[in-house]
Length: 278
Image (cartoon, rainbow, N blue to C red; front, side):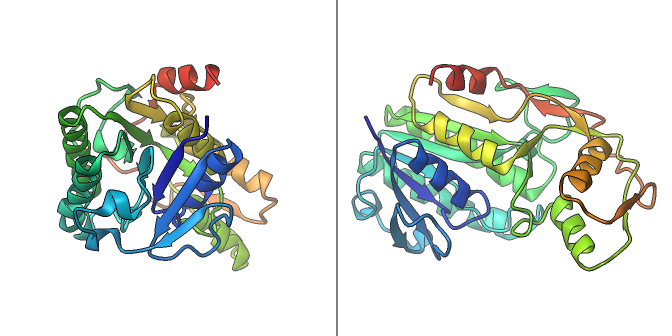
């Protein structure tokens, strides 16, 4: 049976892909954001500022079965003041939704909650965030899980890793590389590229998020990832090849950052369980 799923931040970099994945999966979707340009027209569109919402927001947004809260400002600017400045507004929105009767809350998380870590990250990995982005997300995670428990609601925290795809809309190294190639630059300044990360295509990420929020058996922290670490150099070289870019990497121009892990990735056990049950 189809669920009625509210997606906040539906007009964002990941949100547009998630809305489509949910609709393709047969769900009824309410898409909410400040602007909903290019968001799948099959969804119900509600353009609103969620931070200006009141205690009736759950009813105002159609009493969904699930709220997938993806809205977040300055996600690519890890030390923006907006992360901590907006934290109370995120908390208030989630609390008002649960107070109104929301039965299932899912929130978009990030590996940056964890901070420095070597190896696989699972739901028990301790968190010591090293940026304002990570600190704010970590605090919201703890508050969301506590609120959901108080309201006897299902809670899911969807922790994402390194995202590739739809790069003209993003701000990742792949976006910068694509722009440099389009600008006709022959080379791209790079590090040694030895560090290993968990890269996931944005459409696969959207598929995993859609699957996770469409069920209630697997809850808590869920890594949306591949579980397979690949060196940055290998992944970027593959990206250049796949997109037929006429540009080369200029290795060693930038030093490897001392606070970057030599290898970090997500434990994919729970997301594999969810996907296998579909």
